[in-house]
Image 1 (cartoon, rainbow, N blue to C red):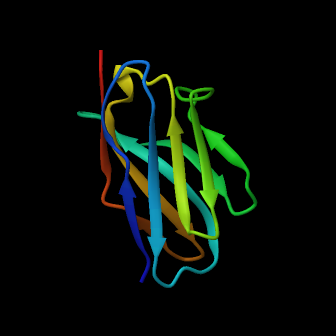
Image 2: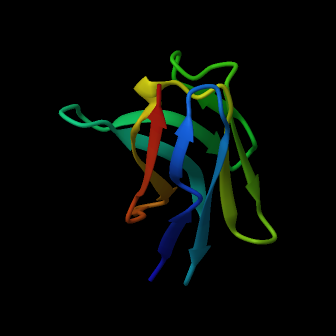
Length: 115
């Protein structure tokens, strides 16, 4: 069974930076993609960024140019570098692993950006 554990969230002032990490463990096989999602208070969960097994990336328009997704395959770890943070980036951020025939979610990490 695959487990995902996020870390790196916290409180930061607008304009600041944070780096989220997502460590995967367990019987990891046939990964199609990994990504970051977020859920802001009162809103639905939305895609932030995704990276495919081939290294292609895709970002939500709201974070393009500010966030960077990356992956260390040797460490089975996914990262999200978040720069120029805005109060509207405040949300619980979730890591997702999309495999062949299965998907796994992390428990989430809170990011709060103060104005």
